[in-house]
Each structure stands twice: as C-alpha cells, then as structure tokens.
Image (cartoon, rainbow, N blue to C red; front, side):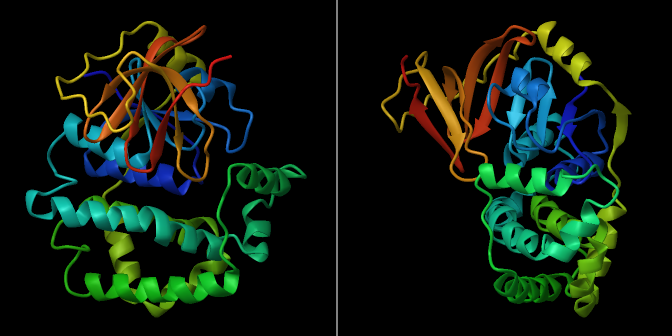
Length: 310
C-alpha cells in the first residue's frame, strides 16, 4: 500500500480531525505542511483549484474534504470501523451536523478578537489580518459572537448528555461522529486556551476529549511538498471502481467540468469528469509538475457544472 500523504497545517481543525482518524486507524502517514493562507502553488499543482485544508494524497490520487477522507481511510483499513454497521446512517448524519453547524458556531466563538490576538502572537506583523482577509475571500460564515456563545454552550450540553451515558458519542467505541464533533472543541481547548473556559461547565465533554486524544495520531513522517508532487508525477491514478454512473446533471462522462464547494472555499477545480458514483465525483487533470492526477470530491457539499469555454 502506498503511504498516504496528508497535506495540512498544525492549527487547522479539520486537519486535526484527519490526524485523529489516522491515529484511530493506526496508520503510517506522511506529513506535508501547507500554508494557512493563499498563495498555495504546491497545493494547486495537486488539486487544480481546491485550497481548503486538509487533503489526502495517495500516489496520483487526491482526495478533498474530510468527509471523503474518512471513506478512504475506512477502505484502507476497515478495522477499527469509523462506520460500524449499526451506526452507518446516524454517524454520517451526526458528522455532517458537526462539520457544519457545530464547527461554524465554535469558530465564531473561538475567533473573537481577544482569542485571535493570542492565536497570532509571535507571528509576523500582519499575519492576523492576512488570515482574516483570506478567510473572508473564501466566504467564511460568521455568527455574532454573542449568538455563537449561546449556541455553543447548548451544543456542549447536548454532547455532554451523550458521553455521560458511555465513553463515546454512540457507545463504547468511537466512530466518525466522535472525530467530527471533537475537532472544533480541540481548537477551543488547544489553540485558543483563553476561550477554553466554556468547556469547564461540561466535565463529561472534557473527559471524552481526553479519550479521543489518547487514540493518538498514527505514525507520522515529515515530507516536503516538492517530494509529494514528485510522488504524483511518478505514479498513475488508481483504477476507477466499477460503480454505476449516476447522472443528475445531464453531463456525460468525458465532459470538461468544474467542481466547487457549495459554500466556503468555492474556488473551482476544472478537469475531465471520469466518474460520478453515488457518493463522489472524480476529475482527471494534468499539471506540468504533478502530471496526470485524479482529484476526488464527495457529492454532498459540492456542485458540478460544465466548465465555461473560453
């Protein structure tokens, strides 16, 4: 098996979700640190446009969005399961809520001015403003801090009521829902400790977070972006699975298309549509540095359009 390469940066909450899932699966992986803000030329060489963090690379295949990365890791190592058979539906639904509603609420609370100031302490002058400008350009939604604080407290109480009953959200073992709910709370506790007092009212949540953290982050090896691009250039994309083409758009396989996130980070990736299954899209594209690659996106949360002709 080709060692998976995670392109990420340390303070990215979604990257931490991926790191924790790699730990849960006890996988060896290579770590490429990407910039937190644009420009990201090495990222674009592999993704063609997508610049959210993280993404996972296996040879000449690039997987965007942690919802899809979860599926890929489950395929690489089915046990322990991120999607236990009796929780397949509820764990996905809960994870989608956690990755959207819970995440944006937590981040609106986390990135209040006094916390943002501490987060960027010690970084070059202008780093905080550059981050703010970059996320605004990506369409980052922002609740008012007062509203976010009230909602975050409610969500923490709801999570507490689940983990008071058992070790993890849905039982004695973690599933994808745990990792999706954990990462924005990890950001509160670890990256902006001045804001972490909100967690103290729910000690059961803190104990659950300790259990997630104890799973580790797998076996990591540092790797450079240049080496990752070379890996792609020297590999061939994996054969596509023999799944049925599911056409919802009247766009045939082989068409030139663009895929973009529905919201936040809507920069499109263009390429040739080579697969459209029940759960994902796959684009074939060629880059002068990375060569021929397949870029994969989940269907949920992404939009497919015919590429505009020049």
